[in-house]
Length: 285
Image 1 (tube, rainbow, N blue to C red):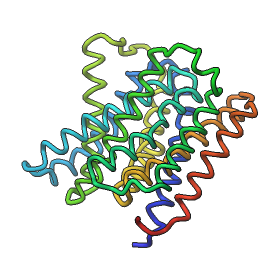
Image 2: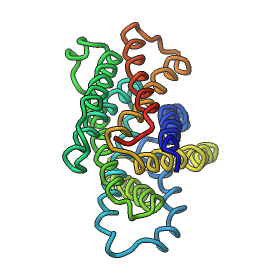
Image 3: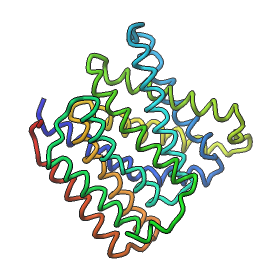
Image 4: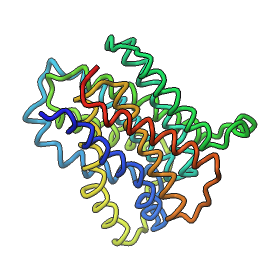
């Protein structure tokens, strides 16, 4: 396999994730609330992957796949819910403290080298995120529940990446399927507990849009990102994935007609620099 391939796949998948707020908010505007939207989208993917899971899951892998279902499913649930209900730029920035968790997790759990360049890249990425949030003015703004959910999504996703990478003997599609089922099951549980009401009166157009989003967007983004992180170090993948943040900020500025400040442009430049440095490094450290 060419050394650049995982980087390219992860890079493109990150762009899809960075733009995912756009169809999500569009479907939400059609009348499907956050948890119900997540339940529907991941339910479609879970059912699509069911035959593959039945055929390939082995009893000795059940515990590991359950961890992926919990961590990966929780990450997707938190991330998607926060994007639907929160400010796109703020949610993405809080989620993308991910390089910190990825670098530390790779060091403590996978014995990956904590090189000066890797640490510097993580710090630059966080500095860029800090500037995009508004610099020191951010310290005077209290965290909302959506902020905490976005932060939790980043932690869950970084831990899920570590588990993904450590289970190389399990096919990536089986692990992705477990993640889909985890998100679907968690969404069902929240609906059953009354966290949100499942919509009864929604136009067919909304459900068709949700189906198209699940199969043509969400599926490709998930497979691309998880395949990419499986074939590279956790620290490196966490930094490349931050391109999602840049995509979200730029698209929010142009599609959402949101004006970017000088600090946001500067922060975006830092993040892009880190991602490009990692992308141009073709060998595994």
